[in-house]
Length: 212
Image 1: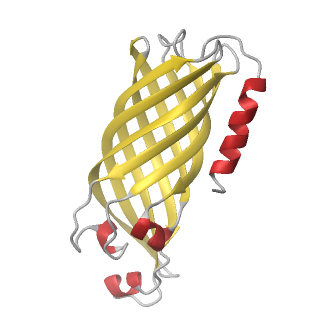
Image 2 (image 1 turned 135 degrees about the vertical axis):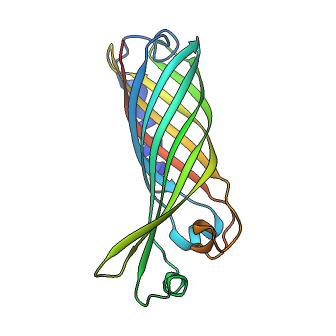
């Protein structure tokens, strides 16, 4: 809830910003790049093992046919230290070791935008990608990491508010779902003590810029 409250406040203030043109539909022929940063919420056993976290996303969109766009994303999701303090010691057979988990992903999919005013648009997206799930370990003397690659999916909704001819403010909520192998050889499964496949909710805010 601490993540959601600032987003709700920001959305409430959006109509007060000056509008100069349509956010997605009228400018859909433009290639656009942007970034978002926000907080993460996790599910069930994953939440018990790591709790929430924070994420960064770089994205690029290209028009297919108005108002449909291609949407490519490169992101990093950080979940911090393992809260099950004995688990990483047992699995690595290294007393006092500290493990931390992160996801890196590259995805591609479709984005559909719909204007609601001259300056504000809503959009929804769906994509498939490759997720690299990494465990970083720190013994206090040395650090090392391991990673697994999995297929995953993400989908979300957002609001775009145009600020100027090229710049827009972007509010986004995305849900990530990653397929895992429920075996001890799977890093995620092992270092969450057998949690179900991860569902991650990413609530973020950022900016986009039109390239042409």
